[in-house]
Image: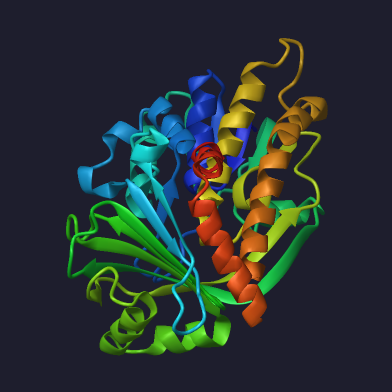
Length: 377
């Protein structure tokens, strides 16, 4: 039987980062991923990473190894509401310059980041990567579940996963624009849609975007089925041409949206991280940031444990849960509340939320506080 300190189940970004972080602390780690999907589609995911996530990746010696076009800084962000026809929509703007930071976020190519993490793991002296279909017994003091929202191991432990389906799907794609993005992210809240254009340098530097468009499921299915020209026309209408002409530069991917939370995050000898523990709506781009903050917190808790305390001690693992419970609850509540607020079709509510956006835009201290929360979530 193989003996390790920690068995990490799930070889996505959260699982890879955890394996690297624990190995750097001198622990023996086994990393076991999921079987590859047959005929997997092109991966068009891109993540908005905050300062805390970038700091973690830099500490793992991964960030500085990313190719130049795999990470694009966001210097400004413009968010618009959905005022009644003929009226100016509410809007709020965030600026890295005003917040006295180098950038608000980085938009990162997900498959490239995963490849860099896999390369780093090959040189990590304390990590052994197990084949996904391996049935060889492994004895670990702690099993960390990073398998995502459909975690089979979590289900086998009998941990309930409380999930609320929004009835919406997200469409993701890579776009090329007719004008430079200048590092500006754009987002539209237009009942019941939420559309985000994230500045990106792939495939064309300075003129590309990562698209994330949340819509009611039937509408999303209809858009995903359109040909490229018709889809571009829908984008032009939804964005009002603010980013110039937009053309598809990749296939489109779509997935259902939900908010979810595991009933328990730890037990004797096991702990949950990332989407295996909590899922939030992508409108704030904080899903992966929450998972990477989980990694940083668990690594800190383990590094600070008493010398006599076992890695799988439930009291130890509860320290991690206490540190992460409030931030993840707050982000889930915020994204859920924003989605419900902007999905409400009432004209009175529409006017109120647009006035609210404009009001916040005129309150620099509140904007600074909001930015600080996003940078360190």
